[in-house]
Image (tube, rainbow, N blue to C red):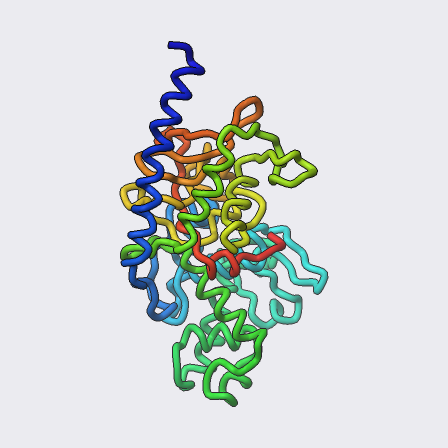
Length: 335
């Protein structure tokens, strides 16, 4: 049997099985309940590789500085602010990995590494300072009713006086969106503590990707007319979820942050599966596919290949993300 014939036979078998998978997926979504929630603060273990290895210990240590924050929340703030870039500089003069403006740094920056200086460009100072500032804000609003973490985040955005005046998160759209964004985004940096809900849109994303089987790969391809309907890996996953109303970032390492991370033995069809040469750093993820069950994904693998089914259990397997609509909306656009 030729390789081509073998592929056609295998592809037909998998495609037939996929119909059952889709029925299974829909059934799972119908019975799934929401078990993820609760207060935002408190100790949370960071998900595998969610924070670059150089900052992992810092975020884990300082993320437990006070009850209003946790390592995943601190990681979410750093990612939202700079994408973990210690050299980030904003048009508003915010500086470093935690994006302190000079006036705030002057009064709230601390010498986190004990070397005798306070350097906003040094993550060893800036990350502890971000945690310290969060906890300081939390202390200002500690007597305000409601969730201390949400009140702290609201203080970060609108000022402690506004939180005190309104008896909680003030009715400002910008502030409410900020609180929701960070508390949602933290789930993509936390190791799940319970079963992760399946996405209701996952079956539709698989259906979209299945229709693209056999399409030639194109680096930078997003399925548009300009790329003649071709895709690269993250272009395919972005288009698949866009077909069901969820907008993902363009590149794979940012798509990693679109939701919580189920373990390998908890994967469900529709989960995004990621691959990296470095198992400690999600920022260097180099490939992504859509899991379809049975240890296989649909992916756009490389130049010269076509969109196809591939096994996920390779030495580069990094982890998975269960895409959520809120998780995708929470992702920053400028990291």
